[in-house]
Image (cartoon, rainbow, N blue to C red; front, side, top):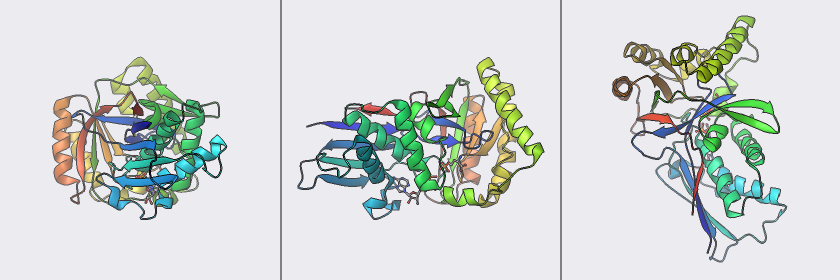
Length: 318
Ligand SMILES: Nc1ncnc2c1ncn2[C@@H]1O[C@H](COP(=O)(O)OP(=O)(O)O)[C@@H](O)[C@H]1O
Ligand SMILES: N[C@@H](CCOP(=O)(O)O)C(=O)O
Protein backbone atom coordinates (compact mmCIF):
# COMPACT_ATOMS: atom_id res chain seq x y z
CA UNK A 1 0.00 0.00 0.00
CA UNK A 2 1.41 3.36 -1.07
CA UNK A 3 1.39 6.42 1.18
CA UNK A 4 2.98 9.89 0.95
CA UNK A 5 2.75 12.85 3.32
CA UNK A 6 3.46 16.36 2.04
CA UNK A 7 4.19 19.40 4.20
CA UNK A 8 4.04 23.00 2.93
CA UNK A 9 5.21 25.89 5.14
CA UNK A 10 3.33 29.09 5.98
CA UNK A 11 4.45 32.19 4.10
CA UNK A 12 4.50 35.98 4.18
CA UNK A 13 2.94 37.39 1.01
CA UNK A 14 4.11 40.80 -0.32
CA UNK A 15 6.87 41.17 2.33
CA UNK A 16 5.72 44.84 2.42
CA UNK A 17 7.53 45.97 -0.71
CA UNK A 18 6.54 43.40 -3.36
CA UNK A 19 2.76 43.34 -3.62
CA UNK A 20 1.71 40.05 -5.28
CA UNK A 21 5.27 39.35 -6.55
CA UNK A 22 7.42 38.74 -3.46
CA UNK A 23 6.95 36.09 -0.77
CA UNK A 24 8.88 34.36 2.00
CA UNK A 25 8.51 30.86 3.51
CA UNK A 26 8.63 30.52 7.31
CA UNK A 27 10.27 28.03 9.68
CA UNK A 28 9.69 28.63 13.42
CA UNK A 29 12.93 28.47 15.40
CA UNK A 30 11.25 26.23 18.00
CA UNK A 31 10.95 23.51 15.35
CA UNK A 32 7.12 23.57 15.33
CA UNK A 33 5.19 23.17 12.08
CA UNK A 34 3.51 26.29 10.73
CA UNK A 35 2.13 24.69 7.61
CA UNK A 36 -0.54 22.22 6.50
CA UNK A 37 0.08 18.55 5.79
CA UNK A 38 -1.66 16.37 3.24
CA UNK A 39 -1.50 12.59 3.41
CA UNK A 40 -2.31 10.54 0.31
CA UNK A 41 -2.70 6.79 0.50
CA UNK A 42 -4.22 3.99 -1.48
CA UNK A 43 -7.89 3.76 -0.57
CA UNK A 44 -9.15 0.46 0.78
CA UNK A 45 -12.71 1.56 1.57
CA UNK A 46 -15.75 1.11 -0.68
CA UNK A 47 -15.34 4.60 -2.22
CA UNK A 48 -12.90 5.34 -5.01
CA UNK A 49 -12.17 8.71 -3.42
CA UNK A 50 -12.15 9.35 0.30
CA UNK A 51 -11.45 12.69 2.02
CA UNK A 52 -10.89 13.56 5.67
CA UNK A 53 -9.74 16.64 7.59
CA UNK A 54 -8.17 16.95 11.02
CA UNK A 55 -5.76 19.34 12.78
CA UNK A 56 -6.20 22.40 15.00
CA UNK A 57 -8.17 24.47 12.46
CA UNK A 58 -10.14 21.67 10.75
CA UNK A 59 -13.44 22.88 12.22
CA UNK A 60 -13.02 26.29 10.53
CA UNK A 61 -13.03 24.75 7.04
CA UNK A 62 -16.13 24.66 4.81
CA UNK A 63 -18.34 21.77 5.96
CA UNK A 64 -18.72 20.43 2.41
CA UNK A 65 -15.62 18.60 1.20
CA UNK A 66 -16.33 19.75 -2.35
CA UNK A 67 -15.65 23.34 -1.19
CA UNK A 68 -12.30 22.38 0.28
CA UNK A 69 -9.44 23.58 -1.91
CA UNK A 70 -7.64 20.25 -1.38
CA UNK A 71 -10.52 18.37 -2.98
CA UNK A 72 -10.49 20.89 -5.84
CA UNK A 73 -6.73 20.35 -6.23
CA UNK A 74 -7.36 16.62 -6.55
CA UNK A 75 -9.92 17.27 -9.31
CA UNK A 76 -7.58 19.68 -11.11
CA UNK A 77 -4.64 17.30 -10.84
CA UNK A 78 -6.48 14.23 -12.12
CA UNK A 79 -7.99 16.34 -14.92
CA UNK A 80 -4.45 17.34 -15.93
CA UNK A 81 -3.48 13.67 -15.85
CA UNK A 82 -6.15 13.10 -18.44
CA UNK A 83 -8.37 11.04 -16.18
CA UNK A 84 -11.40 13.32 -16.19
CA UNK A 85 -13.83 11.04 -14.35
CA UNK A 86 -11.23 9.97 -11.75
CA UNK A 87 -12.39 6.41 -12.35
CA UNK A 88 -9.15 4.52 -11.81
CA UNK A 89 -7.56 6.36 -8.95
CA UNK A 90 -8.72 5.04 -5.58
CA UNK A 91 -7.09 7.30 -2.98
CA UNK A 92 -7.74 8.49 0.52
CA UNK A 93 -6.63 12.08 1.17
CA UNK A 94 -6.31 13.53 4.67
CA UNK A 95 -5.72 17.26 5.21
CA UNK A 96 -4.12 18.21 8.52
CA UNK A 97 -5.16 21.87 8.85
CA UNK A 98 -2.49 23.43 11.05
CA UNK A 99 -2.86 27.03 9.80
CA UNK A 100 -5.68 29.40 10.68
CA UNK A 101 -7.91 30.45 7.77
CA UNK A 102 -7.89 34.08 6.64
CA UNK A 103 -4.78 34.71 8.72
CA UNK A 104 -2.40 36.27 6.19
CA UNK A 105 -0.04 33.32 6.53
CA UNK A 106 -0.88 31.78 3.18
CA UNK A 107 -3.28 29.25 4.67
CA UNK A 108 -5.06 28.33 1.44
CA UNK A 109 -1.69 28.31 -0.38
CA UNK A 110 -0.25 25.89 2.17
CA UNK A 111 -3.14 23.46 1.60
CA UNK A 112 -2.81 23.83 -2.17
CA UNK A 113 0.97 23.30 -2.19
CA UNK A 114 0.81 20.31 0.16
CA UNK A 115 -2.00 18.74 -1.90
CA UNK A 116 -0.41 19.17 -5.34
CA UNK A 117 3.11 18.30 -4.14
CA UNK A 118 1.74 15.18 -2.45
CA UNK A 119 -0.32 14.14 -5.48
CA UNK A 120 2.63 14.61 -7.81
CA UNK A 121 4.80 12.43 -5.56
CA UNK A 122 2.07 9.80 -5.18
CA UNK A 123 1.63 9.55 -8.96
CA UNK A 124 5.41 9.34 -9.61
CA UNK A 125 6.07 12.96 -10.63
CA UNK A 126 4.21 13.41 -13.93
CA UNK A 127 4.53 17.23 -13.73
CA UNK A 128 7.58 19.53 -13.55
CA UNK A 129 7.98 22.07 -10.74
CA UNK A 130 6.97 24.88 -13.09
CA UNK A 131 3.85 23.03 -14.28
CA UNK A 132 2.87 22.32 -10.67
CA UNK A 133 3.45 25.95 -9.70
CA UNK A 134 1.19 27.07 -12.53
CA UNK A 135 -1.58 24.79 -11.22
CA UNK A 136 -0.98 26.10 -7.69
CA UNK A 137 -1.39 29.70 -8.88
CA UNK A 138 -4.64 28.78 -10.65
CA UNK A 139 -6.03 27.14 -7.50
CA UNK A 140 -5.03 30.16 -5.37
CA UNK A 141 -6.77 32.42 -7.89
CA UNK A 142 -9.93 30.32 -7.55
CA UNK A 143 -10.04 31.07 -3.81
CA UNK A 144 -8.82 34.66 -3.57
CA UNK A 145 -10.32 36.10 -6.75
CA UNK A 146 -7.09 36.66 -8.67
CA UNK A 147 -3.98 34.65 -9.47
CA UNK A 148 -1.04 35.61 -7.28
CA UNK A 149 1.97 33.42 -6.59
CA UNK A 150 3.48 35.19 -3.59
CA UNK A 151 2.30 32.49 -1.16
CA UNK A 152 2.33 29.33 -3.28
CA UNK A 153 5.81 29.94 -4.74
CA UNK A 154 7.73 30.38 -1.44
CA UNK A 155 5.72 27.61 0.21
CA UNK A 156 6.58 25.25 -2.67
CA UNK A 157 10.16 26.31 -3.51
CA UNK A 158 11.26 27.66 -0.11
CA UNK A 159 13.21 30.85 0.59
CA UNK A 160 12.30 34.33 -0.59
CA UNK A 161 10.80 34.13 -4.06
CA UNK A 162 10.23 36.77 -6.72
CA UNK A 163 7.67 36.25 -9.46
CA UNK A 164 8.93 36.78 -12.98
CA UNK A 165 5.70 37.12 -14.97
CA UNK A 166 7.16 34.51 -17.38
CA UNK A 167 5.26 31.29 -18.08
CA UNK A 168 8.30 29.03 -18.40
CA UNK A 169 9.92 30.16 -15.12
CA UNK A 170 7.25 31.54 -12.84
CA UNK A 171 9.46 32.32 -9.84
CA UNK A 172 13.11 32.81 -8.92
CA UNK A 173 14.61 32.34 -5.47
CA UNK A 174 16.53 35.26 -3.96
CA UNK A 175 19.41 35.11 -1.47
CA UNK A 176 18.37 35.46 2.19
CA UNK A 177 19.96 37.42 5.03
CA UNK A 178 20.54 34.44 7.30
CA UNK A 179 20.99 36.54 10.46
CA UNK A 180 17.43 37.89 10.31
CA UNK A 181 14.68 36.66 12.62
CA UNK A 182 11.11 37.13 11.40
CA UNK A 183 8.62 37.55 14.25
CA UNK A 184 5.06 36.82 13.15
CA UNK A 185 1.95 37.59 15.20
CA UNK A 186 -1.51 36.35 14.24
CA UNK A 187 -4.08 38.40 16.15
CA UNK A 188 -6.73 35.67 15.98
CA UNK A 189 -9.31 37.52 13.86
CA UNK A 190 -10.17 36.57 10.26
CA UNK A 191 -9.46 38.79 7.25
CA UNK A 192 -10.66 37.43 3.92
CA UNK A 193 -8.00 37.84 1.22
CA UNK A 194 -10.67 38.30 -1.45
CA UNK A 195 -12.30 41.11 0.59
CA UNK A 196 -8.94 42.73 1.42
CA UNK A 197 -8.16 42.82 -2.31
CA UNK A 198 -11.45 44.51 -3.12
CA UNK A 199 -10.65 47.55 -0.95
CA UNK A 200 -7.49 48.40 -2.89
CA UNK A 201 -7.70 51.29 -5.38
CA UNK A 202 -7.75 50.46 -9.11
CA UNK A 203 -4.78 52.76 -9.82
CA UNK A 204 -1.85 54.42 -8.02
CA UNK A 205 -0.05 57.76 -8.25
CA UNK A 206 3.14 58.16 -10.26
CA UNK A 207 5.03 58.86 -7.03
CA UNK A 208 3.88 55.59 -5.38
CA UNK A 209 4.67 53.66 -8.55
CA UNK A 210 8.21 55.06 -8.61
CA UNK A 211 8.68 54.25 -4.91
CA UNK A 212 7.42 50.69 -5.48
CA UNK A 213 9.86 50.05 -8.35
CA UNK A 214 12.83 51.66 -6.61
CA UNK A 215 12.29 49.79 -3.34
CA UNK A 216 11.90 46.40 -5.00
CA UNK A 217 15.01 46.89 -7.16
CA UNK A 218 17.09 48.06 -4.19
CA UNK A 219 15.84 45.19 -2.01
CA UNK A 220 16.92 42.59 -4.59
CA UNK A 221 20.31 44.30 -5.00
CA UNK A 222 20.74 44.48 -1.20
CA UNK A 223 19.97 40.76 -0.79
CA UNK A 224 22.56 39.89 -3.43
CA UNK A 225 25.08 42.22 -1.75
CA UNK A 226 24.08 40.83 1.69
CA UNK A 227 23.51 44.43 2.84
CA UNK A 228 20.98 43.88 5.64
CA UNK A 229 20.66 47.57 6.53
CA UNK A 230 19.85 48.62 2.98
CA UNK A 231 17.42 45.71 2.53
CA UNK A 232 15.38 46.53 5.65
CA UNK A 233 15.49 50.28 4.95
CA UNK A 234 13.32 49.86 1.83
CA UNK A 235 10.67 47.58 3.34
CA UNK A 236 7.77 50.07 3.21
CA UNK A 237 4.40 49.19 1.73
CA UNK A 238 2.97 51.95 -0.46
CA UNK A 239 0.42 49.67 -2.17
CA UNK A 240 -1.66 47.71 0.37
CA UNK A 241 -0.83 48.78 3.92
CA UNK A 242 -2.21 52.35 3.70
CA UNK A 243 -5.61 50.89 2.72
CA UNK A 244 -5.65 47.66 4.73
CA UNK A 245 -4.31 48.75 8.10
CA UNK A 246 -7.73 50.05 9.14
CA UNK A 247 -8.86 46.39 9.19
CA UNK A 248 -6.19 45.68 11.84
CA UNK A 249 -6.88 47.10 15.32
CA UNK A 250 -3.73 48.47 17.04
CA UNK A 251 -1.59 48.14 13.89
CA UNK A 252 0.02 51.62 14.02
CA UNK A 253 0.69 51.40 17.76
CA UNK A 254 2.43 48.00 17.62
CA UNK A 255 4.42 49.02 14.56
CA UNK A 256 5.81 52.07 16.41
CA UNK A 257 6.58 50.01 19.52
CA UNK A 258 8.24 47.21 17.54
CA UNK A 259 10.50 49.68 15.74
CA UNK A 260 11.28 51.35 19.09
CA UNK A 261 12.20 47.90 20.47
CA UNK A 262 14.76 47.52 17.70
CA UNK A 263 12.91 45.85 14.79
CA UNK A 264 14.44 46.82 11.45
CA UNK A 265 11.19 46.55 9.51
CA UNK A 266 7.51 45.90 10.24
CA UNK A 267 4.52 45.16 8.03
CA UNK A 268 1.35 43.22 7.24
CA UNK A 269 1.83 39.57 6.29
CA UNK A 270 -0.20 39.00 3.12
CA UNK A 271 -3.61 40.58 3.58
CA UNK A 272 -3.39 40.32 7.40
CA UNK A 273 -4.28 40.24 10.21
CA UNK A 274 -0.85 38.65 10.84
CA UNK A 275 1.95 41.19 11.10
CA UNK A 276 5.67 40.54 10.83
CA UNK A 277 8.80 42.21 12.19
CA UNK A 278 12.32 41.74 10.86
CA UNK A 279 14.86 41.63 13.70
CA UNK A 280 18.64 41.51 13.53
CA UNK A 281 19.15 39.51 16.73
CA UNK A 282 17.33 36.88 18.78
CA UNK A 283 17.27 39.28 21.72
CA UNK A 284 15.38 41.94 19.76
CA UNK A 285 13.10 39.26 18.33
CA UNK A 286 12.20 38.06 21.82
CA UNK A 287 11.35 41.60 22.95
CA UNK A 288 9.17 42.15 19.90
CA UNK A 289 7.55 38.74 20.44
CA UNK A 290 6.57 39.72 23.99
CA UNK A 291 5.14 43.08 23.04
CA UNK A 292 3.14 41.72 20.11
CA UNK A 293 1.76 38.89 22.27
CA UNK A 294 0.64 41.40 24.89
CA UNK A 295 -0.62 44.14 22.60
CA UNK A 296 -1.69 42.69 19.24
CA UNK A 297 -3.38 39.35 19.98
CA UNK A 298 -7.15 39.72 20.29
CA UNK A 299 -8.59 36.21 20.61
CA UNK A 300 -7.66 32.81 22.05
CA UNK A 301 -6.65 31.63 18.57
CA UNK A 302 -3.87 34.23 18.25
CA UNK A 303 -0.18 33.34 18.50
CA UNK A 304 3.31 34.78 18.05
CA UNK A 305 6.31 32.88 16.67
CA UNK A 306 9.93 33.69 16.01
CA UNK A 307 10.91 32.29 12.62
CA UNK A 308 13.76 32.01 10.18
CA UNK A 309 13.26 31.69 6.44
CA UNK A 310 12.35 28.12 5.46
CA UNK A 311 14.79 27.49 2.62
CA UNK A 312 13.50 23.99 1.94
CA UNK A 313 9.90 24.66 0.95
CA UNK A 314 7.46 21.78 0.54
CA UNK A 315 8.70 18.36 1.64
CA UNK A 316 7.58 14.76 1.12
CA UNK A 317 7.78 11.86 3.54
CA UNK A 318 7.01 8.28 2.73
N1 LIG B 1 -7.95 23.82 2.76
C1 LIG B 1 -8.28 25.10 2.90
N2 LIG B 1 -7.49 25.94 3.58
C2 LIG B 1 -7.84 27.25 3.74
N3 LIG B 1 -8.97 27.80 3.26
C3 LIG B 1 -9.80 26.98 2.58
C4 LIG B 1 -9.48 25.62 2.36
N4 LIG B 1 -10.47 25.08 1.63
C5 LIG B 1 -11.36 26.07 1.41
N5 LIG B 1 -10.98 27.20 1.99
C6 LIG B 1 -11.73 28.47 1.95
O1 LIG B 1 -10.93 29.40 1.22
C7 LIG B 1 -10.99 30.69 1.79
C8 LIG B 1 -9.58 31.06 2.18
O2 LIG B 1 -9.58 32.36 2.56
P1 LIG B 1 -8.33 33.30 2.48
O3 LIG B 1 -8.77 34.58 3.03
O4 LIG B 1 -7.75 33.27 1.10
O5 LIG B 1 -7.35 32.56 3.50
P2 LIG B 1 -5.82 32.68 3.59
O6 LIG B 1 -5.49 34.12 3.41
O7 LIG B 1 -5.52 32.25 4.98
O8 LIG B 1 -5.25 31.81 2.55
C9 LIG B 1 -11.96 30.60 2.97
O9 LIG B 1 -13.23 30.98 2.53
C10 LIG B 1 -11.93 29.11 3.31
O10 LIG B 1 -13.14 28.66 3.90
N1 LIG C 1 -0.50 39.32 -2.38
C1 LIG C 1 -1.66 38.84 -1.70
C2 LIG C 1 -1.23 37.95 -0.54
C3 LIG C 1 -2.37 37.37 0.25
O1 LIG C 1 -1.85 36.56 1.29
P1 LIG C 1 -2.81 35.82 2.35
O2 LIG C 1 -1.87 35.05 3.20
O3 LIG C 1 -3.53 36.89 3.08
O4 LIG C 1 -3.71 34.94 1.55
C4 LIG C 1 -2.48 40.03 -1.17
O5 LIG C 1 -1.89 40.87 -0.52
O6 LIG C 1 -3.67 40.10 -1.47
